[in-house]
Length: 351
Ligand SMILES: *Cc1c(COP(=O)(O)O)cnc(C)c1O
Image (cartoon, rainbow, N blue to C red; front, side, top):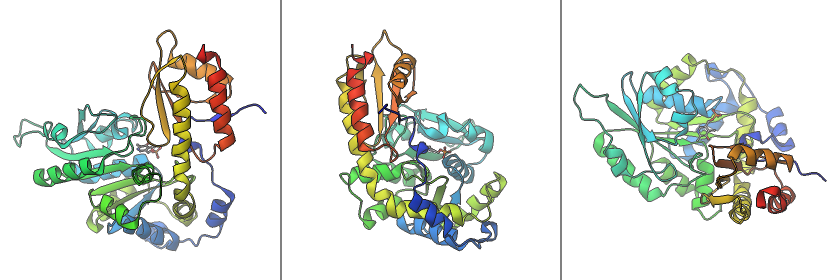
């Protein structure tokens, strides 16, 4: 059989029959009136999981991040994040466009930085400068090759933010992967989720990636924060009605997809090991979760590599002139992973 394995993104995952059943069975109401019982219960479940008071369902991770920024900053303020951050690179300049704020970029290690790095970029409290008003981290960092943060490092950043009076936002689109990886590719204990959640003032999580829901992200924080977020969501056009059909899918994902996420990490490692042995690949970023980013030797461009891989039935993205990204997800089975590994070894890319 011809190989057709799509590694372009974990957003390609489609709802399973069991997930569609859960959506079909959902009780619904008008969520703008806070009358959708499935959504009310799901939001509370998300808040409880991370040890926070409240949560708000949104259509996308971009919206949860942009709402968080909108609540935390005022026009003219400045946000500190890594140069690899999704909020900076892939949200259409939304920090400036939606909230009138500027960005100070850090040069961390695969998207991870230290408190010293961040502290050095906080502006003086002098009217010449933009007011620094938010620090944002991304765990796992997508552009950083799915890099997982050390919780002790985040703890230090939390303490620094407290001392500096700055809120800390987590872009946790793939924090599921980070939590599972840190627990040694098992499901973390309830106390671990809560301890992690406590490190942040606001948390954005996605259900439409490795967890396989068709739509959905959730913003988590205090009651006061979520009340403000509610206003921003309405203004951004994100107020929705009978969304129990969507939140039922996300709720199902927590029960049935989260426990299998470690499979993706093991398979990504398998592919990373094969790539590291290819003559045309000069280096592979450490494979910590479900993302594999690697560097193509000069003489071949990332675009040419992607083209050749596509002819072999392996679909992936050029992530820079010499960089390629593969993302492993639930809709690729072990047979496809094994076939991908042999195809890569036998391909023209290994001459
Ligand atoms: C995918 C992603 C988001 C949100 O993306 P949407 O497509 O808007 O849901 C946010 N942050 C990171 C790190 C992501 O990978």
